[in-house]
Length: 293
Ligand code: R5P
Image (tube, rainbow, N blue to C red):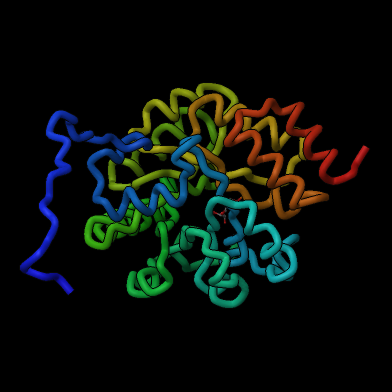
């Protein structure tokens, strides 16, 4: 209990040392609230500035896809290697042990499945995201979808309001429709739309031509999805090129959990993302860890 008598005199003010004004390590977020920055600093490693997010939210539209049939067996052993996990609240509650202590980017929009018209999504309730201690909320945004573009951008804008109110960052997830080309022009537009409508950071895809322009034109950090399963060497190369072009990390699913050796793969991805390991060395690391070749 505080006393009002007999206290030591306060004298360590170091008046000759100026206080640091501080600047945040992730672009576009220097003016964000303390809670937003704190959660971002749990998702992104402040030392490397990057993140390896393990995505296993696919079931919310695809059902039990390959590698996710038994998330308790396939995903839980990988979580310790991830900086952050991205999943639905159903997966979180049913299989992820809370004591693993990893920040969660919560899949925050839901609606249609692969069996009907994709992208017709509404938002999950913010109360549940708070209850689950989400480090980020992740709505899908379908830029260029003539039916659901406006609705999904409105969803994102609603999330940005939640970010402002509750300090939980919004991860804008760009969904690219079947008829759209994943080139720098489209990805640059989609990521910028997310940022301008309040996304704290954005998930998109890598493109061979002009990805550095996509990154430069987006005022907040970009992480890349892995996309469909590639040979391990190609996936590591993809991660390397994205990071070299300015992406701040990966939000990778199938190229990890559908790998021949998922623990070896996520560790090799980590070496690329956090240490800048060259893709051939990372592939060698993958082979060594998995006892292949
Ligand atoms: C797709 O439903 C989700 O947004 C995934 O989290 C995202 O596509 C990343 O997973 P992958 O690396 O498998 O593309």
